[in-house]
Image 1: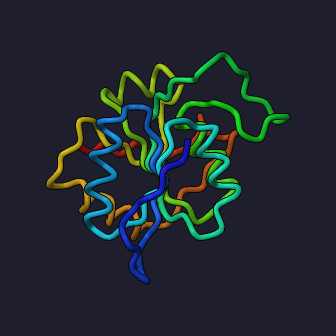
Image 2 (image 1 turned 45 degrees about the horizontal axis):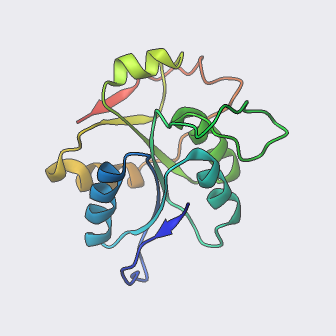
Amino acid sequence: MLKTSSSEPSVLAHTVLLVSDETIHAQLCRSLLEEAGFIVLWTNDSSDALKVCAQHDGPIHLLLTDLILSPPEFQLASTANPFPHVNGFELAIRATEARPDLRVVLLCKDPEKELTAHGITRTRLPVLTKPIDRRNFLIFIQEILRQAPPVLSRSRHTDIEQETEWFG
């Protein structure tokens, strides 16, 4: 289910697609982003996030997603289903295929454990640890928006050469 921000967007506002199934955490992120002038599109699962990437008319500048997303039911991620329920890393890969200028931040509680559990030993994507640090959250987001978008590929995601950046 997609929820859009209720604040009036500024002309130069960046749009953030927030994907989190933790309501309290998502509300905090959304609140901080909206207070700073960001437009926030919030959904609680990867399937809806992929639909937003495909169907949203305006730009989406940043995907801020939980690494671990609880699927509502068992579902195989296949090429036949363009909007599968997948983990946050796979969501990032699929979303950047649809929107090459998209920046991505993964959110997780224990980056080393959670990335390893998903078979991810190295990634270009910045990782923000939860709970988020309110003071540094917006500085971190603004820094990510100044960087070049990542180049991700389903076939190469385990061979990426740059170390994971962990923040939090």
